[in-house]
Length: 185
Image 1 (cartoon, one colour):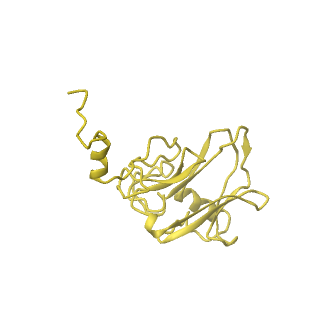
Image 2 (spheres, helix red, strand yellow):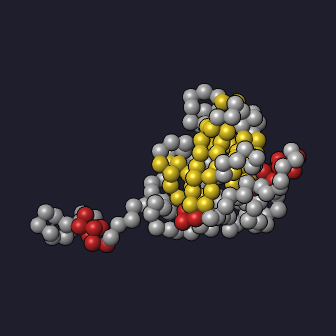
Image 3 (cartoon, rainbow, N blue to C red):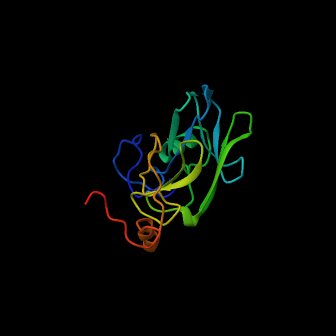
């Protein structure tokens, strides 16, 4: 979530919205075995000098780890980096998840047209499939879903397909163009 407009971070304990502290991202283990993510880092843009956070621990299959902006800020401060938090740019950005060996585990690129208040991007189903906008709190046109952002929880639901009213009506007409009666009436 690059543009929070509410207090998302449960780790800061302040119940106060802050544009940098409440940004978040999550990583998800899509595999069938545990993954030690110790030493895996988040990189902003394409420069190795822009490390934002380093993970530690093990992700079990189907498990996710969420990082909030305030946690990234604290990590940067503790490790001698410039303190910017996740710094997910509202004008678009590239975020890379880098394994301990320096190879990219995943990359996401987003543009300014894909950023809105309290909307997040994620894959559905989690960790695979297409990227969707979780925009229930700030509805947007396709490829929106009208589903809520879910940091640390499973992305579920069905995307809402945008459709013209004439096309919707056509779904309820028979081959002769006559309206099909509702069987519940």
